[in-house]
Image 1: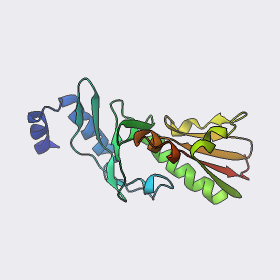
Image 2: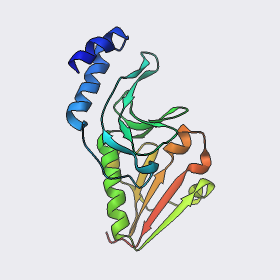
Image 3: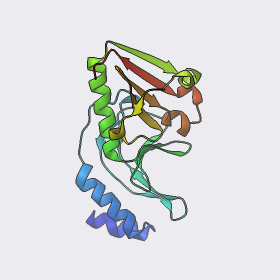
Image 4: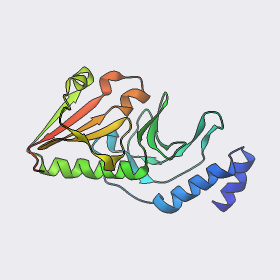
Amino acid sequence: MGRLREQWLALGVPSSEIDRVTEYQKYWGGLVLPPALHYDGGPRCLDSDLPEGSPDEGWLFPAGTHRTAVPYSFMIGPSSEFGVYGERWTPLHRTVEGWVESVALAYDASIWAQQITRVTGEGVDAIALDGFEPVEEVKGMADTWWRGNDSLVALYTAEAECTSAPARRTALIYSGLDR
């Protein structure tokens, strides 16, 4: 980030934001993840670039390159949340680790579930989560995971929020899992 630091400072990016990008790049830069089962595969490779924003709005920077064309960007938020930015900023998980855990959990659940049920749009509101507990490891914000007796429920709402398309809310119910 040495050469870029001076250029970014000249563009008005605060030093503290450049430091956040540098830390992200050191820790996550170059990590290639398998395709996420939602969000058209998610970012192909975690990699950072020029922060955007302002002191009033907060600063975001890219989380990585897209696998496919999507109407939003994968970004890291002002408090290091992992999220998507389309019509508006919508954090999915409180941390990048939460995103990685969510991708891993989706793969694991899809392997072991005896049945996977997809629910979309208004049907997501009808899912009863009584007796379920949140899966804390995913550090969910707009996207959350819930653990029940023999099932997992993944709620994906960030894409719908950031694009103002409520019909895009999705839940995947993985049933037939042992504890």
